[in-house]
Amino acid sequence: MTLFLEICFWFCIGLVVYTYLGYGVVAWIMVKIRNILGKQFKQYNDPSFLPKVTLAIPAYNEMSCIEAKLQNTFSLDYPADKLEVLFVTEGSNDGTSEFILSNLSKYPSMKMIGGTTRRGKIEAMNMAVKTIDSPIVIFTDANTNLNNQVIRNIVRHFQDPVVGAVAGEKRIETQGSEAAAGAGEGLYWKYESFLKKLDTQLYSVVGAAGELFAVRTHLFGEVEKDTLLDDFMVSLRIAADGYRVIYEPDAYASERPSFSIQDEMKRKIRIASGGFQSIARLGFLWNIFKYGLLSFQYVSHRAMRWAVAPFCLPLIFLLNIALVIFKPTFILQFFMLGQIAFYIMAIVGYYLENKKIRVKLLFVPFYFSFMNYCAIKGYLRYRNGLISGIWEKVKRAE
Image: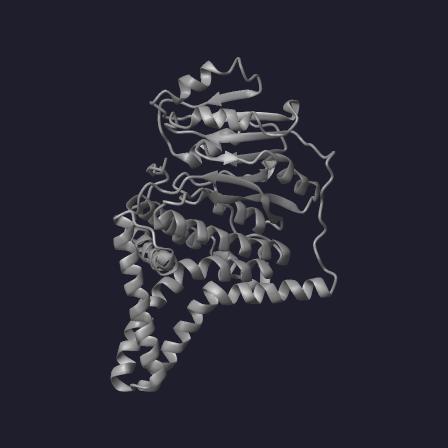
């Protein structure tokens, strides 16, 4: 019995380590082997390649940031005659639609569609794509700022006919006095950026950040209206059709972190619910014999992070307790003390976060535990059917 518990204990530890560290190491080694064999993917950077682009911006009740978004959008470095801007303001009732309408004469390349009923972001995207005639559409959120060269850095990849989508980078703007949630979120996205660079060099990114991603317009298949992670579903379906999804770190969208840990928890739980919804709808991607590297990347980088590691962590803790009782070896006691210390740091980090006190030492244990707790809560929410395609807006730090 003890042997069985010990095998389960080390196996679960192995799964968690692989999910958060091991995959990155394996992907790095595989990329190095590709480079040695001379099988790198061709890079495209022709500055004269300037296709027509539509920047699609779903905007529900964004009056607090819409003026800044207009200024940022029309200051981007891209030929004005090649860029159309489309706002989708379905259901807005805070003056967002009226403000955009009042600026249409100022920005001739800007259009707006919408209605009085709020149907959710994915319905806004489905509605927008039907009106777009440009070969490339770039989706971005109204509460983000884009870097000046963002469009040029994205479209250059579409010169490669095998590229079906391009994922931009999400950056979290934190200040010195920012709370741990925002700082932890920033650290998380830096690590994600590192993994996405490896994914691109290995084969394809598995998922895109909804704050900034681009697709060939004809590849955008209408997405189910109850979809929670539209960006993830759209990009993975494009990849499953045989196209590569490229990560471009020099095209980025910056946004402020969530206003509070409670707001960030709501967002993370919803994302996790969407992760389990996506796993159910993308079950075909587990077929590694058909999808090869894409399956390996999808399972290792995404599915395991949502559906395996979060449930292994409490199991590891419980197995460790049992093993220390029945087989109190030094290594098992060491792991037990290490886990206790780690989770105490996470709890203290959570307490200080609510007090708006920022301690860098607690970022990793707090945010790591926080993410996995939200993943479990997200699974329960998905299992109970408490999901909707209409997002509840999360307040952002000012």
